[in-house]
Image (tube, helix red, strand yellow):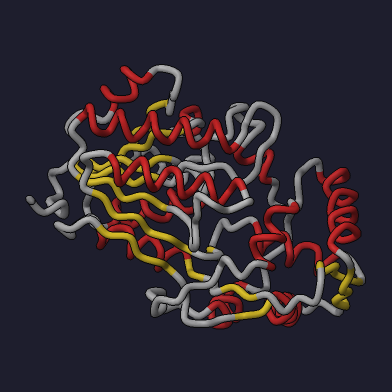
Length: 322
């Protein structure tokens, strides 16, 4: 197989205006690649909100027109896929996200894409009772059953510039006298820096082998420890309040009402409590969350980041997941 690091090759990133996709696309640009994006927000191209200042061509990610989708991938060496949805909302469901992903995989096959690098999640399982993790596993199976050369990257909790989850925990710690934690808070995660995830995704494009690898960072935190670390980093004096799951969710819905967002879902808590954001593999990320927070804690959480505004309301189809 020819190397995909040839700078003359075409590279496409789904969701380059999103979180993970933006970091992958920027690193590709920095290496001299010509980059395009399939996005649900093509109108951002060339605007003041365009992080690439017009350098990344934006093509609509239209799952309803498989023919046009395949045509947009013709001549592409590497497709980096970050598409997914964080939760079901309105017409956006996990089942639809799985079907959309299958449409994208089939379009890549039809177009002759040479390598697919897919961003998944740690510990996906078709037997999972959690639709997020079950859906991710079904998409992985669709990729494996295609004739595409592939790399499947499975990150845990991803942090970095533009992150929503840790930013909004920090936002709450700055503004409220206590922070609700469902259960005992002893469930754990291995946060991975988005830049390390992007590096791993890009380096995996050069491998001639099909591969599935976890992407976790060098530190492991219980959720309590994670909240305490964020609290110290932003200078908060909020107290951690352990409470039953139902009460914690009710409080998150009250906050969600005022910020017009879905702050937290039952499934996200269940995924954390089930220790699904841990890996038995050696850490492939090198950036410590504690070091990153030492540099960014002053600004983290100063503004609330809305998932619905960023990925659902702008185009109504939840096209940008990771």
